[in-house]
Length: 464
Image (cartoon, rainbow, N blue to C red):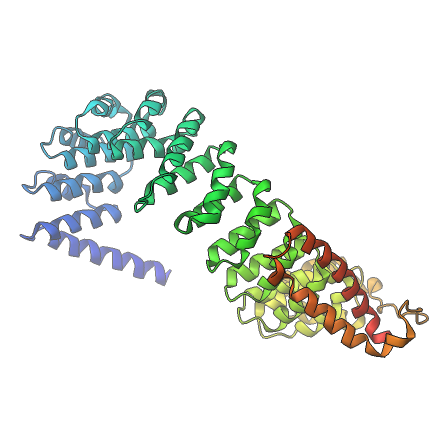
């Protein structure tokens, strides 16, 4: 309540400051004040009075701000904006048309539609976008023609409108435009190709996937948006081609690539994903954890356990606790008990959730759960576990009746730790070999190593 009062007071103070600025002799001050009043959704009466300002920049800023300052119905505001369409300054006209679109002023549709034939591209641009907001069906059939316009602003607006309206008919023209752009030697302006890629993804133009893969591989400035598009389109065929980019320096790209691998269920990328559990970027580690959990990669247990106890980010640790439990199942209980006293509240809550997933609780597990249930910060999260485990369901973890025979030659039983270290080193080195071998081949080796490593880790206590 106090924070809300402070915010309201701060808003009122800023509005008052803007009202003082509109009296300034400097048109830049008046323009800024108009812009802020629109953003603050305040004083449309002042903005309407500024529509008569002698300076075109001020009138333009006021017209733009009016579209954000009020909600419909607002007949007086719409009347002022309609009058501004005839302003001799094209920027004022465009701003008024844009605001009418933002307000979805259906009563202005005829005047806005007339602006589609205006000789000035900036006015036509505003009219295209406004018509897409006010009455999409009246503009849809003209978008293909506007896409082929040589005027940059018109072409840009038509492309954006195609994405807004999911106009699939325009997909082939936008793909062709992207192909033409990629053939240019001078590609300084990346705004347009980024928009092409976003719209192609929105329209799910599958024919664009090969080009998007090529862009993701070769075009640094467009790589991120291309990968995002491939992820959105669930382009499974791109996973194997893009997997080497998991070593790219862009945090966002690495995260998006892991997401793509998961969507495509491309488990062959595990050797490249596993090292990202130690990535410097929080979002990358979190996404790598999700992949390890999805693919049940038990080789990663030690790394995940280390993250649960020691990750520097307090929000990654609880996710690691959940992943560790998913990987180990009942065997995660000793770790859950140890972490039930952790100083990190989110970790303790994650422990409570995980205890609910146990088939049964050991005495230590029961004590940990009761302790969490008695803590007001974790009680709500422990409730499910309490319901899942009544007193009759508490059992000690079963002890092995007899030591099993181990299929390991006697000659090397004393060197199990050395053998395990060598196998783990081999597996850790697989990402460095990706340039010399196919990823599928590395994946086969990784799976074989994983089986041996997991088996030897389980046998290690018995061989001591």
